[in-house]
Length: 348
Ligand SMILES: [Fe+2]
Ligand SMILES: [Fe+2]
Image 1 (cartoon, rainbow, N blue to C red):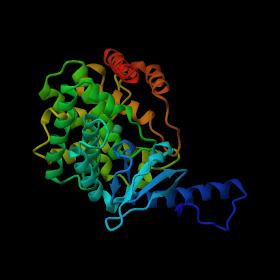
Image 2: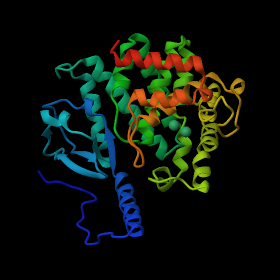
Image 3: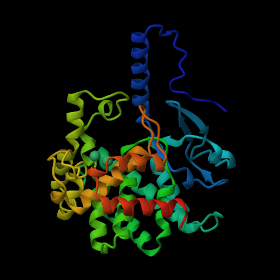
């Protein structure tokens, strides 16, 4: 099989000094991040062995993209059975997203896949939400997309309300790498799960859900160089990063479909109960329930996801880190969150 490594370009240059090595690393990362925008991460579990697909699959590992399955609409290939043994995230070309969307729709209707239909439908909702989030981050001013995201949030919430085990299907799948669109959907699923677990009524779960899905919409204004920088941000870059909260609020104020009650989810998700958060450094009593829930879900998802500068932590390690900063989070909510994840881990 033909292999395609973005970074395997046989460069004659061999760095020998620390300075050269640092410059070389920067070059490699720059190249990587200019390529990553050509690929889109899909959920491995959405792929059904022996199913014919009209788009190629790539594997993402070691800062490179390797062709895994060559396929096209004119020459569709079958999904190989050994695909699930492959380590790393499965990617498709950005241009193939519409074909993948069609595939998701077909598998929602296909009862003969030999797989659990409920699980497949759940995965399809999550995958469609990710595609929509990608579109929203690209075009945050589209009212249609925001309206559509409310519908998908309601679908996610309804499927968890109808069957609590759906939450297990939605959370148990963990991707290796961080993409804002995947992160947004993960945080929404965790927050909706929390909302349902603490007994919020359906309309409030929906408002919490839409706020959590769009909590990082302000990141659409940040350049990928800062967003994906593999090393520590400078003070100036960190300030730009922090602006995503205010920018998010500004973007959403333009949307009539975004509920007023959901703003706290966006504005307060980086506030900490200790008053050390941003943008306002609010104390515990001033932080709304949605802000408190999303702060926990947001931190947990970030810690359990790999970044160029840090490995993905196990759920246990991530929770240990959050517990160490207990003064920043709502104690009762954190206990419920840990219990909720515990149930998922044990498959209840
Ligand atoms: Fe954020
Ligand atoms: Fe976030």
